[in-house]
Length: 275
Image (cartoon, rainbow, N blue to C red; front, side):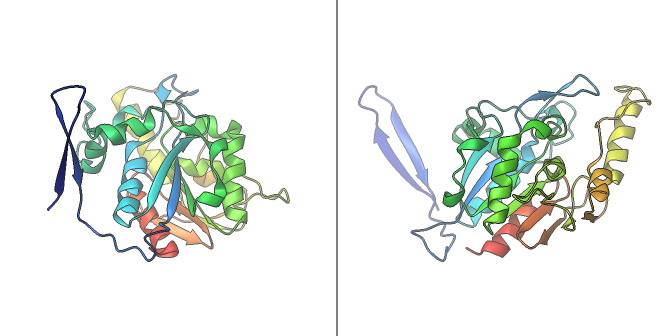
C-alpha cells in the first residue's frame, strides 16, 4: 500500500500529492546504491528509406524498470544530448499496434516525470564513469546510422570496459561494437562472445516492409547487418532465436539480442553486480 503525502501549494489553492512506495528492494548498501547510465540514440534520418529514426522505447523502459525494482539509480544520456525521439512502431500507442502489448513502455510514457527524461538528455561526454557501475547502450534504428560518428560514446563505453565496470549494449545499440576500440587500438569486441540484432530478424524486418510495399525489394531496412559485420571482426556471434529474449555475458561485456531482450539484459547486469 502506498503512502500519499499531501502538500498545499501556497501560490494556489491546489494540493500536490506525492505517492511514496513502501516497497523495499533490499539493497546490500542503502547508502550506496548501484548506478547505471543508459544511453539512448539521438534522432537521425535513415539513409536507406529517408524515414526519421530514433531509439526504441522498450530498450529504455524495460531495463529502467528492472533496475528500479532492484533499487538501482538510473540516469539517461544520449550521444549528443538534448531531446530524443523514439521509433514510431516502438510506441504502444502507434496505429500499427506493433508494440500495443508493451505495458511497461505505456506506463513510462504516461508518467510525466519519466517521459520528461528523454526531453533533455545529457550528452555522453558528461558521463562520469567513476559515479556509475554500468553503462547500457540501447538500440532502435538510429544507432545504425549515427553511432559511427558518436566518438564520445565510443570513449565512454571503452572507459567503463577498461575500468572493469559493466559495459552493455542492446539490439542495434550493439552497432557501437563495430567502432569501439581499446586504448591499445584493438577492437573491444574482437574475440568476444556477443549477441545483437540477428540476421534472422533483419530478414524478417526486410520482408515485413517489402510486403507492406513500404520499401522496394532492391533495398534493405538497414545499411549493414550487425551479425555479418561483427563476425568479420572476429566476434563469436550467438543468438537465442527469432524474437526471443536473450542476453549473454563475456567478462564485463554484456549484450542483448533485440527489442524483446531489455529485461534479460538488465537482469544479467543485476545478477553480475548484485544489489
